[in-house]
Image 1 (cartoon, rainbow, N blue to C red):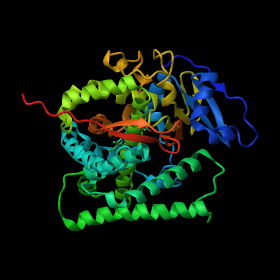
Image 2: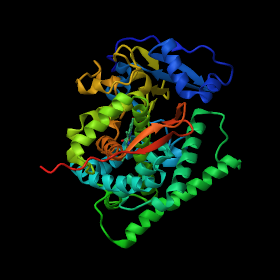
Image 3: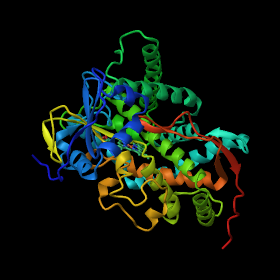
Image 4: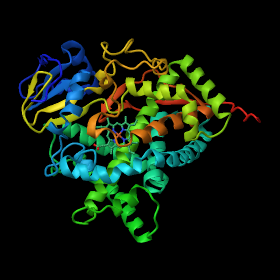
Length: 460
Ligand code: HEM
C-alpha cells in the first residue's frame, strides 16, 4: 500500500441516530458540523449520512495522500451511468468525470488556460468589469447585494473570455437557474433520502425546467458558433475543433454541452464567492481597506488596471490569498476510493467517500499562526504554512483547478478595478457563511457603495 503519511486514529463521530446517522445535524449546518467535528474529534474522523459513511480528513498529510500521492486510487464520486449531485447538472464534464474521459478532456481544455493567453484575457476581464460597474452609478450612496453583483460580473467575464459572447440579457435567468440547480445537486447528494428525479414533485419539476433553459443556452451557443463559421480562438473553438488522436472523432454534442456548462459554472461561482468574501473582509477591517486603497491609488493613478499592474499590487494579491484561506470557495474536496487502500494508517474500503476538509486545513492551528485572524500581511512577509498542503484553495495533484491562473489574475484585477472607484461598507449586521457546493454568504451580502475620488494620473 503506498501510504507514507504518519498514522492517524480514525474517530467515529458520536451521536448517530438509527437509519439517519448524522444527517439531521449535517443538513441544518453542513459547514459548522464539518468544523465542529474536526475540532472535537481530530484530523481523521468518519460520520454517517443515512447509509453512506463519509471520512473527513483535515490534516495536510492526509490531503496529500488522497489528492497527490494516491491520486490514482481515488476517483470523483460520480457515476456517469447513474448521475447524482453535481453530475445531474454538469453531466460528465471536467469537474465530474474520471479516468480516460477526464484525461482526454483535460488535455483538450488545458491549453486555453496557458499563462500567455491569460494576459490577453485580462484586458477583456477589465473591459467587462468597467462595463458592469458603470451600471452601479445609479446605486451610488445606496446599497447593493455585492454577492449577487459579483456572480453577475464573474459570469459575464467567463462568457466573454471563454465563449466570446455576452450573457448580460440572460443574466437574471442564468443566475436563478444555476442557484436552483446547484442547490438541488447539493441537497440530493448530501441527503440519501432525497426523492429521485422522475418523481413529479414541485422541486423536481423546477429542476427540469431550469436545466432545460441551461441546455437550450449551451446548445444554442454551440449551434451559433458552428453556423457562423467565425473563429474566435476561445474555449468554444477549442472544444469544437478537438479530435481524438486515434479515431479522429470530435466530441459529441452531449460532451460539448457538458464541458461548456462545466466551465461556465465552475468558472464563475468560485471566483464570485472569493470576491464577495474579500469585500466582506475589507469592510470589516478598515485598516486593511485603507492600505488597499493606498496601494491601488498609488499604482494605478486612476487608470483601469491591466495584467502588467498585478506584480505592483502585492497587497491586493495578499488580500485575495488571505480571503481564499479564510473562506475557501470550495471548502471540501470529495473523492471516492476506487480500490481498498490505507491513508495515514486509516483503512478505507473500496467505494469509501472521502472529504478533504480544505476549510479546516486552512485554519489548522498546527500549521498557521493566529489561524482565525484576517492577516493579509502573512502573505507579504513570505510566511507560508510549514506544510504546503495546508493551503489548497485550488485543490492539489492532477485534479488541481484548471482555472487557477485565470482566477489568480481575475480576482486581484477586479478587486483593484472596483476598489479604485468605490469604498464598500457593510450594510447588514451579520454575514454567515453557508455551504452549498461552494461557500456563499447566506442570504446575500448587502453593502453601501461610496464613490471614491479617483486620483488624477501623474504626468511624468
Ligand atoms: C477563486 C476561484 C476558484 C477556486 C477557489 C477554484 C477551486 C477549485 C478546486 C478546489 C478544484 C478541485 C476540485 C477537486 O479536486 O475535486 C477546482 C477544479 C476545477 N476548476 Fe476551479 N476554482 C476557481 C476558479 C476556476 C475558474 C476561473 C475556472 C474556469 C475558468 C475553473 C474551472 C475548474 C475546472 C474545470 C475544474 C476541474 C478540473 C479537473 O478536475 O481537471 N475554476 N477548482
